Image (cartoon, rainbow, N blue to C red; front, side, top):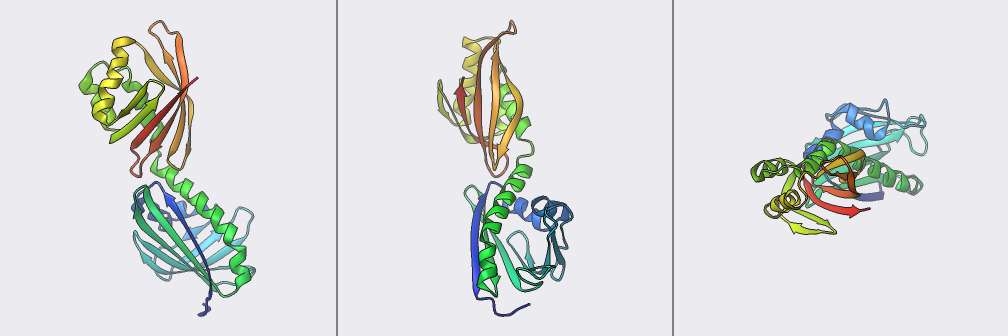
Length: 255
């Protein structure tokens, strides 16, 4: 590899997942391919091969120089065609650090030539955005089930049972906001949902359609149905998930 790499590209992104979850995507070829492209592989050991096949067929590869789970990976990077830079002519360092929202990823890409560096600015901006979504998709793979449990809790008459269902899916300090709610903490939300059964007995909430997820934020449509089967209300909820896949906030919008 070229020893003099004076031109540096630095980028960082926050991902709503724990560093251990994020690092899996540097040590497993299926996960590596999920954010680079089908056919991409990685041999996760010093000296192991890094191979990337982009969707347009362009191929790049390199060699793992360092691997320190779950905090750091370093590898060389270049293109099979030799353009815009040959194999082994640049070095990528990715560091992971704990962050209040999950993980802060810090990337440094070192180049021998300024023109090659400039060509990769938008590429990394895009690739790390894609990476953040792929990781969050895995971290929140059970988001639909958690949201269904939230809606189901509104129909549970027994306080202890309702609390048990909610405790499995929400943070203790969970926040809930809508036109009729401004409550914080599981101890407040449990009786707040119970009041719905007191004043609107038999009413149940149902999710409508598939959820829409982006980097830990989920949109879910819902309807409220009375005991006679009539729809009484509808709306959209915005759920925010933390780095462990628990719900940290819900904001409801009524239609």
